[in-house]
Length: 249
Image 1 (cartoon, helix red, strand yellow):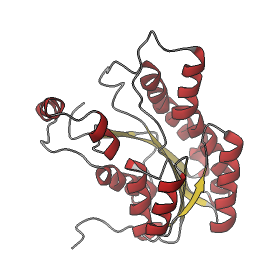
Image 2 (cartoon, one colour):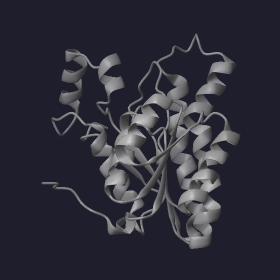
Image 3 (cartoon, one colour):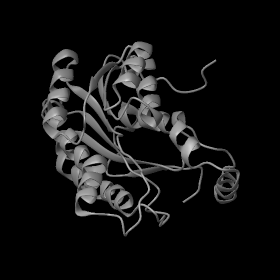
Image 4 (tube, one colour):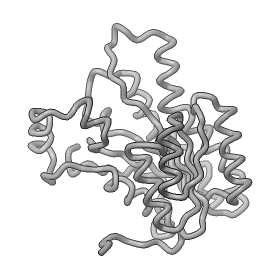
């Protein structure tokens, strides 16, 4: 039996998820679909996107989020077919490791485009419809990495720390229209990518020593917080950051 909440305010509402084909994003797509929302998601991975769309009934649009014109077209297409967006989940990002020495101006700009820039322009694209309804939720995915002063990925932690500032600024600008903006900050979430690339017995032991809750976190743990932030249950919550990390930070 499902022990988790159902949110009537999400049923039949349009929700857009970026980077929704795998990992945390795929779990978010699945959870919104289970709530009866009309879910659309964009991703660069066409094979995984089509498979998830078949599984969930969500609408998939292949899109490179670094291409803002393509992103705007994808959002407009989804809203044309499904109505105004209730919630935008800006999830897409890549946490590739890199040293200070190997970063070039071109790599830096690409990381900002991959991890930060599209969040603003996706929000900009859905805001007209939200303003007409005087209702909406912008959910921007941050990262615990910069809070922990993690090294080995300076461009990533810079882009992710900027999301908190972006979120608070957006919250102030759109609050008078009844629109909320919040930042969701995951800890170390055990996606297939994370487990394959970085999880070792040693790193897991170190994580368990530092977390208050002695369990690994998985994508549904983040997805369920996303549902709450999108639903009317959090209607007076904005300009906040919500850390889902088992008490690590």
